[in-house]
Length: 230
Image (cartoon, rainbow, N blue to C red; front, top):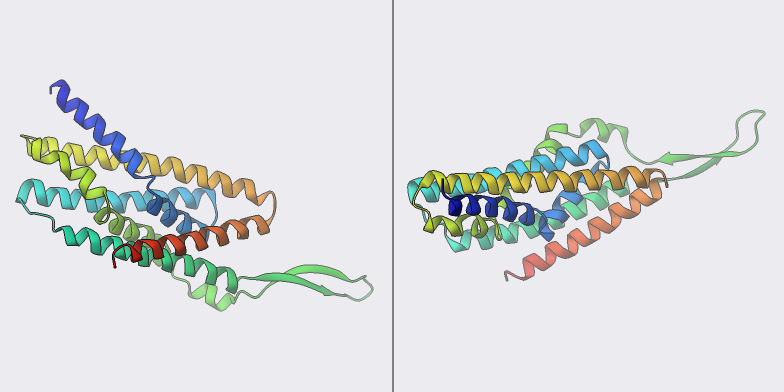
């Protein structure tokens, strides 16, 4: 394998790491992680998003390399609009989840004791049992699939393929692009989880403040993406 091929493969890895940090990607995984602010869950959400993203790019790339399919430009525009819808939906869901789990202080008195306060949540425990854990675990994969179809991912991953003489070299390019996305997203997930862990020392108010901020920015950015395609 000559130096040009190696340079191209390293370029694919670098582009993948940069591409993972696109604003819409960051907003999506942040909104997903904010639903369950925890260091381990942040890593899980980010890794599953990256796997979904990589699967979409690999499927599109395989269709171009081995079957000679042409990817319609309209597909990317439709996918980007859907990304905007998803970001708005995620932001609204986080706000709704905060509302249903809202907590406030209750003051009461036990026999022979002074008045004291405790936190009381309005969260419906029946609703908690009805939540589907599989839906939460699969959501990052589906969002990643959508992101892999939309935006600059097909362009960054498939543009150099036309100059490649070997289809397997092109496939290796796509693979390293996906590996770069995966590693970069894991690093971001670890950082986000560390932020959650740090904020827990300051209390739930800081966590809820971060969740509120992420949800509002997610809705605003999603609306911007949708308006850009109308």
